[in-house]
Length: 114
Image 1 (cartoon, one colour):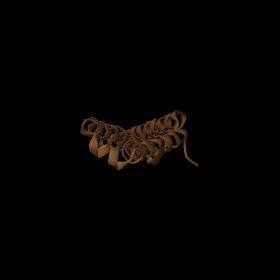
Image 2 (cartoon, helix red, strand yellow):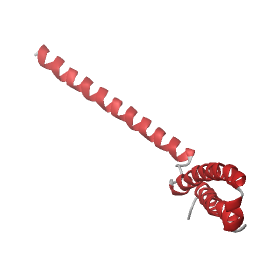
Image 3 (spheres, helix red, strand yellow):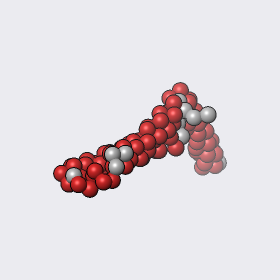
């Protein structure tokens, strides 16, 4: 099952690909090739606009693809629990280390007294 962000990513990707394919098709193929060849002014405007639209929607498709294929992040509660568990382990380790050090000091101190 996909997360909400992944679903939105797939929708963005699909819409952008449809526009990338559909816009040039509607602009150049539907009117007929004979009409376009005679109208150079139209082509001088339409070609750069088409390239700009394709570029913008290609970036949109890339963003959609990235959103769709990136796994969802962990919930904040889970991250907080992990951080708390790590802090507790550090505290336990520090306590164990300090106890071990104090026992070693006692042993060393006891040997010196003898």
